[in-house]
Image 1 (cartoon, rainbow, N blue to C red):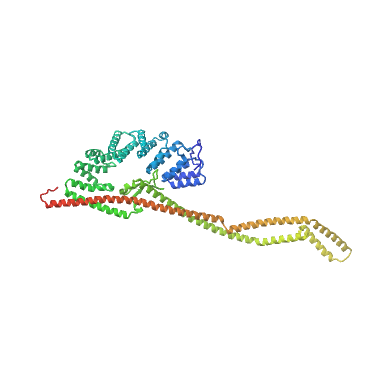
Image 2 (cartoon, rainbow, N blue to C red):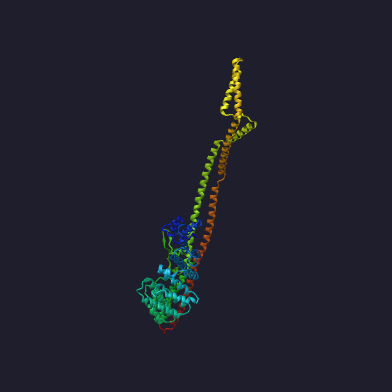
Length: 624
């Protein structure tokens, strides 16, 4: 976790840490995985400085949109504390973190975690900071309480309802869900009363500030639900009255028409039922529930005592069901990921498929026959996971392609290294290093011998050696002169000069010896330095540890990435199987339903054919 910021630390207006700026850039580009990767790398490298807890908050939000709800919950709990107040982030920011975490868990159907996180929100602060979010928060808490079986949650639900105005869209949704809950519990009377109240509130608040389309859609949904309750109890007049108020161009117009046909038939008005069914028959039967329309139309004709029209209607319905069943068989046999994706229209931009704030793909069905399964939360989650896995697979493939560049780089580096090694060896050979080493050893041995023998002449200076050579020449010259008085004087002078020279050599022996030894020591140091450098060069030429380390790291990274790629491939296979299994289950359910209509249509055909045959054998029987 990054280091906490000071309470009085001003909120930065620009990124103070390059790594955080990079992560924010990827975040705003919609690249959630890349942004999470940058934050993870920054955390491993010591964390982001200068931004307090904000990077961790951003990471939690990214996890939510990536579908990592458990990881986001753990991060938020560590960041904000179990009581929601363990961070220096502002209360408004903490509230939003808990709210969206709870909302995502609610959408996933995890009631316990949803309630746990929603309860951490400070309602007063949320209402002051964002009243729209506060209203939704009250609604979500009420829905969680509604799904609870605890006694204390009943009074809590009542208290939450009182926090919303009756005309508030969230209160209206709550009213409708309350009716559905009552119906699930078997309390039809309460459900009916709730729906009647809801319809009355919406009709009386026509000038509400809430979105008109949303209110109208909820009103039609409530009317349709109430009408079906009336149909369930056989109250056809009440159902017709409710259904007659619904617009023909509304979202639920087709379902209302079908229910209207049922109510009219039950009321004894088959002509009105037939009109409604004829209207539905003229439309595409792409939704599964509409497949019952052909059978219902033929059934109404039979109830109108028109067997000669009903028989071909049943035959036509049976043929349609048979063709549709065979078509579904073909679809199931050919069902692949490619064929499924071809039926989906994804909203894209230059960066790829767009998603909403919760990571769900923005997609519309090209074939509305799969609209029902597409709208399910499990299908949306599986589809989003499949897309994310493909993104990760693409990311891994792109990284793996870089390894080839790394290998080429290493090979180029090795070639350049071999060229430099050859040049270095030629330079070493030109220096005749071995010969210099031999001469050095010989020089050391000569000096050592001279020291042992105390050879003063060996250590003579250049001046002394020049004088010695001069004296030797004089001696040779004097040896060739005749023996006379002059030569005798010259020889005497030479002996004095030789004696002085010998004394000088003996007197300077210590100084000359020390100077020679000093020079030898300096030469030894230089030779040692030379040999050390040469040995270092030889070592570098024989073994390149840096090159080996780079190669090792690249190989290790390649193995890790290959392992990750295999795991992603397995996950992709599982996600693909789950997705296709859901679609196949939907197709099987449609086939079973169609098969029921097919069997009923065949039976009706047989019944009507027998009836018409009997009439043909009985001339006294009247026609339709």
